[in-house]
Image (cartoon, rainbow, N blue to C red; front, side):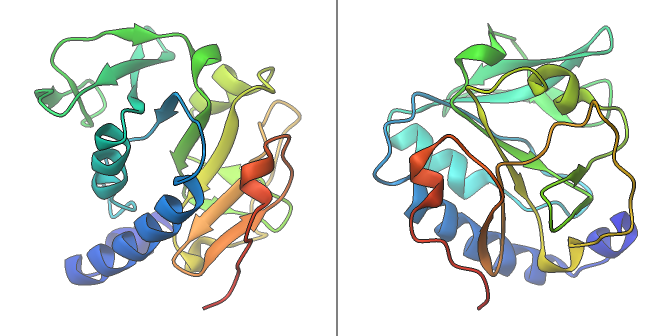
Amino acid sequence: MRARRNSQPSPVIQEKSQSIARSIDSRLRHTELKIVACYRAQDGEVDLEPVIETLLSSHVKVVIPVVRERRMQFSLIEPNTEFRIGPFGIEEPSTLEIVSAYRIDLVLAPLVAFSSSGHRLGRGSGYYDQVFLNNDRTALVGVGYDFQHSEEFSTHANDKPLDAVVTESGWRVFRTNTPWINEEVSVGG
């Protein structure tokens, strides 16, 4: 799945990323989110830069993951944040300003695959699971492409299920305590 994701031509990634960004923007437009976690794309992941720009211009605080001592944390970014390549080859802020995961309203998480029941296959380190397993306050939304839908991966008791996933076809909602996620659910396209 990672190889297929990474083998997409750049124009296709950008087109799908823009479609996904519009879908995210339309869902988040009328919410009162204070802090949203995004990520810096790599390996053909959906590019969230348009989402990040919209959130920052709407005065929503944006954080991105950084890993230190085998633990994921989240650092605040701003429009003028300078980035450097971190220990896993992923861009991260040059200066870290850590924000507690329990303050995050929404996490937009990359994925390798997702299932019909809302399970997420990541890169295998379990960082998102470790941080959010016992956190029912934060909505966890996977971001990926339609072709990443799969039932061919195993899950474990300590995996944190997704509240929803958004792809170029729209939103699939699995479970949530967050009312705005349930609005205008559209799948297909």
